[in-house]
Amino acid sequence: MSKCPKYTGFKYKIWLFDSKYDILVAVRLGRGTNMKTVSSKKILKINIAICLAILILFILMAWTSAKTDSKQGERPEMDISLNTPFKVYMETSRLISINEYIPKEEVIYDQEYYINEYIEKIEFFSKLFDYNMNDIINNLNEQKDEDLEFAFSNIGYLKDKEGNLKTFPNFEYGLIEYFYHLNKTNSLPRKQKHLPYNGDGEYIENLIIYFSSIYENVNPIDLLSIGAAESGYYKVKFMLNANNIYGGLYNGRLIKHNNIELGVLSYVRLMNRHYYGKGFNTIESIGRKYCPVVNSTGAAVANPHWLNLVKQARKKYIDYEDTITFSQLIERKEEI
Image (cartoon, rainbow, N blue to C red):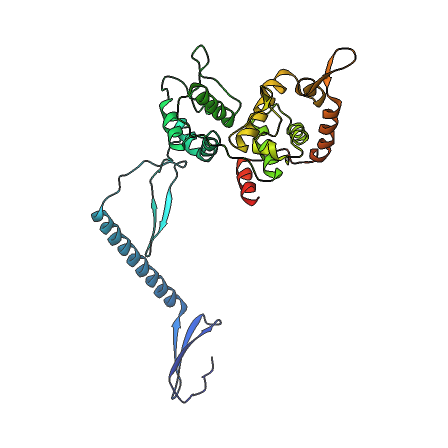
């Protein structure tokens, strides 16, 4: 290797590698250039020594830290397998894995769970039937029977004549029957108040669709059409004042319901129990009982005028969305 030229100015040291002789050349630049050769094997030894020193220092730091943690409070040792969950926590100076299994809280699907899960629906139906919400919650808790296996569709622990718990198709169905049972037995006080409906027909249509989803055997399109034919598409004032959109009569007079929600529920429940539930599941067969006339042969048939009104209304509702959730019902009511 030839001599490097001399440099003037500040001193500066560089390393050059000579592949021919397998050596490193140290060159100090400054006022005259000095050159120093060092074997690469010696450099390798130096690097290994430095790495070992760093490793020993790291081990000492980790041991000191672990000792400090043990003074603060030792963790119980746990046997851990590959299937045992564990958490890894990043701290400011180190990474720690904690061999702790944190079990999930067990969920018990009992009456209390479903009261909390469906509290908004319970509040809705409490208001619909004119009951105080707190009275209902207290009464539901009083019905609890530890000797009977709870069924979520029978929140009120209703029993048949043999003392067995009844079963219902869904939670809302059982909840509604619980409220009708309260009405029948006068188990709780009610502050009944008649509130004539003065809104538009859209909310009534939404109520019919929602309640029809509870009673799965009814056809919401048919019920929308019959209600529209009876109430002039939910606009006849004297029927809305009575919260009666289906033309139900008692002793020849229009039945009055305390609110529109109860009026619509009464209509859908009536159709479920006394029409669809008994095999009247077409407009023509429903009409024979709902609005009958006697033909020339003496047989009861649906009134032709009524039947025509229902079929005309059906053209409007045939493409309607026939399902609506409880949350959608409440949201659309607020929008209206």
